[in-house]
Length: 312
Image (cartoon, rainbow, N blue to C red; front, side, top):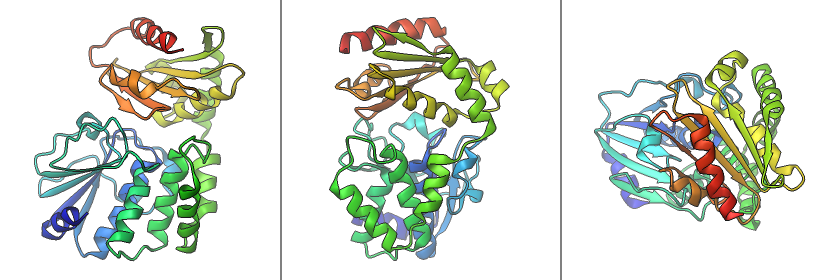
């Protein structure tokens, strides 16, 4: 923590990086850090290499400052919730601090602060802010809570424990707007997302005696629905509550024809280990990877199903 503070104090222009197709943890972490850097009178920019961001997260402080062009004047970058260099979406030439909670993090930074025991990257930052005697205001508390809420699967994750709720109590005392976060992160949905959900469940198949829920989404279907990548997550995770389903898989064709695979598990199947075999990563129950050779959906399906069936 002292090394991070020292590098922040020496830097003239700091860029915060949220990973491609960012979730509430990546954006919440950057939002909280943005406020912290302003409190320390630093010049700060926020970068994300995703042109169409999930608008239900636009309630997060400083969301409107996010840019898709990395500033040349930056002399320090801080990546937040990025498990690998590829997830940055940019080649970083300045010094890079990597702050994350994924067990599969590749330690790609010049300085790596990776804490897999934490339920979210925002939870790591909360610990960091307290340890450095930062003034945690309402904006920071709200951003931190949003990340915990999302990465804990709205407190349904097996990683949730007493520490999680103790942290939430402290954040409420600090002014976190939990009603706003709950409404936006859990309940808010766009018409495009509802159209996509209908399509995904219509085309869903069950494999291995209904223990695997399998989804396909083509690039054409994404464009037709008007949905964004994050809109695929809700149907994927909801399928885990179907009788017998232990693993949910999503194969999504991207605009460059590469395949993005998301994996979810509610059993003893370690999907993080499976994703790592394809160069991806994540957690025991939530993980993903991306192909870079433009394979067909069927090719990826056969490979991934074979691995999951072996684990089951």
